[in-house]
Image (cartoon, rainbow, N blue to C red; front, side, top):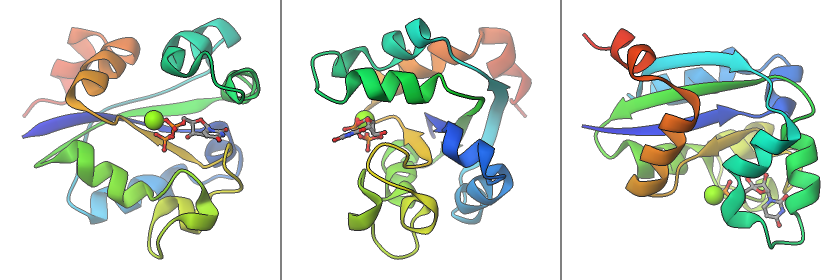
Length: 141
Ligand code: UDP
Ligand code: MG
């Protein structure tokens, strides 16, 4: 069993796609074990995406990610990290495979509806960024 962090980004929440996005994950057998809605400050978005701080898209990305509410989810399942990324599709929705979330809903390379951790190290860091031990225990069965 593995856990990963996913975010439904502001374009997904504002277009009323929270349930649809979660449905893609659940349909594929990933289980939601923690969930919350929140709005990041620009500073929090910069901290979350700090690996990208030197990229040309960083300022626009952090403006966008703090522009409205997001939903944070912890997903659990076998190979949850890579499976979540498969279900999301490529970063650029125009290049995302048929049947993926970004192909279905992504607007452009930035407003691509979902985030998913890319490694066990990122998953651990990103889950702890959004959820306390108590919130993680709540989803335990
Ligand atoms: N992004 C962007 N322009 C780019 C590449 C990425 O605006 O050229 C944004 C996009 O929202 C992406 C996020 O930055 O999801 C993080 O980029 P990363 O390369 O980590 O893509 P991901 O892991 O989300 O597929
Ligand atoms: Mg990434």
